[in-house]
Image (cartoon, rainbow, N blue to C red):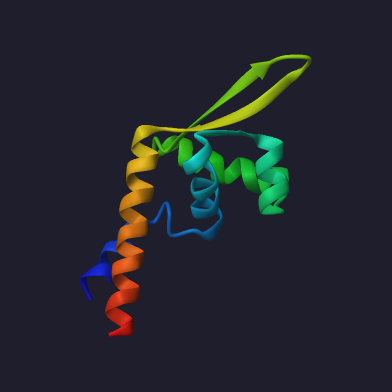
Length: 100
């Protein structure tokens, strides 16, 4: 199954938490760290670890916003949006192959 091979080749988005981060960011383009914590229900250390992986691969940018106090924000990159789209298409294709 070609689609399954394609899915397994992306070990960044193969992790459910990293995929969830990217799915949350896709329609929004950026989010605050605390919003991701709330939505994903993970620990700060766990989220930070996954964001570092995504940032190292060029899928997101993590930066500070200075308002009433410093806040950490995460922005999806063009590469991140493109790779997430490819991954979702491969996932859809794999499901179609399995179904029939």
